[in-house]
Length: 301
Image (tube, rainbow, N blue to C red; front, side):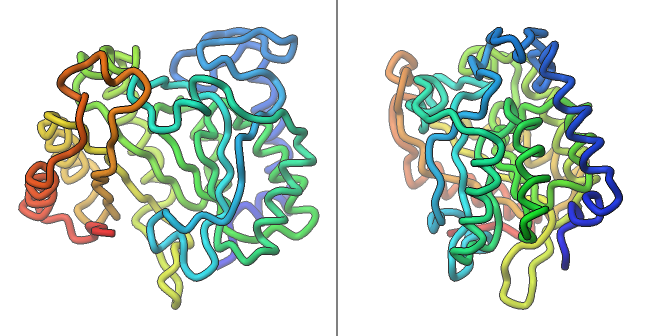
């Protein structure tokens, strides 16, 4: 299957989307916070992301889901800063502390092509939300030089519906890590009380665009939705809420990964209820909840 972004490029639609997205940076509303700062002249919003791209690292990743990793790895690019800002962030040095290097869109295009040459099965954009215009501009330049592997949009799920609609036909695989089901939890841990409401709308749009996961003859993902949930200590009801939503609004066929690798990093020590790792019994209960609800594509590592 040829990535759909190729046809958008050939029709000129991809270039039009780049223009529309870059215009958003004049009064930034790339994410639901809608800070309205002019990033083109150096103003910073909640995420602290500058106008220029900032990348922390890039490499063939072998720690992702097997359907992304395959034999040669997922071509992962970690973008610096984040629009959500969780107090327990596992990558806080990147998202909160801003560790990374500013690069041009030409350099990002080169990185994408380098990862493709290494044999990576996809380009995995980690925390891309606040750099979407620059990323899609880089994608345009990479296509001109031969990029032709799927694009993975690896996100917290805290997305602006209007921006997601501009990504329709560009992104092959959406991979949101859905987090907080209750507004009070989202406010406490990420200063984003609207997270549940916004993310429900976002993942429904992602599902509308790409549907259930499709794999090729080598069982490598080429299109579709992968939903992750990082299980937090003492928060099984959050998972159950999300699973019921997915079952009712999307499908029990959705590819689902309930992750147990939470560690109490960054500011988590300030919150006793999440200041520990996941207990085996908690994870077993989480998997049982998903199985009892009938989920058919449950990833178990």
